[in-house]
Image 1 (cartoon, rainbow, N blue to C red):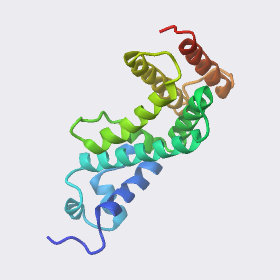
Image 2: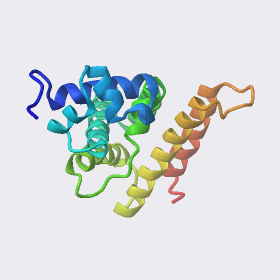
Image 3: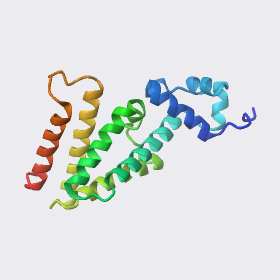
Image 4: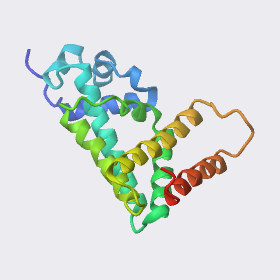
Length: 189
């Protein structure tokens, strides 16, 4: 079967992006993408080998976009101001695009170079932001995990309505980020 004229991997990815952004990653199927593009599902196999490949492509693109937004947000900042901008941008992205964000959380197979590279760029950026603390390499990676856990957990719980107490969510997050940064400042590793 010959490929449909005008259809390409970029259009397939764009359709999957729209579905994930509006309906969540679970709604991204070959059938839903084909329907959005007005083609039959088998036509997609000329451009992607599987649903897993499509979701990996989507994850890499989302991670690249998140990285770009963080880089723009921290421009001209350093130290704790940059870390605060990183955290705020990360959380805002996760809340603004929950389906895309969820799709980017797939565990990367080390052979999947695009997702690994895109996720690695965020890790490297985070390491740079943490470089002014007196951390050895292992501690710095632990701190990257800690910061990611803080922002991911906060965004996930907020999105799911998991914060039931009548407390200001932003104040609550700033309080906990301050504790995290204070621990790094005082070497409580």
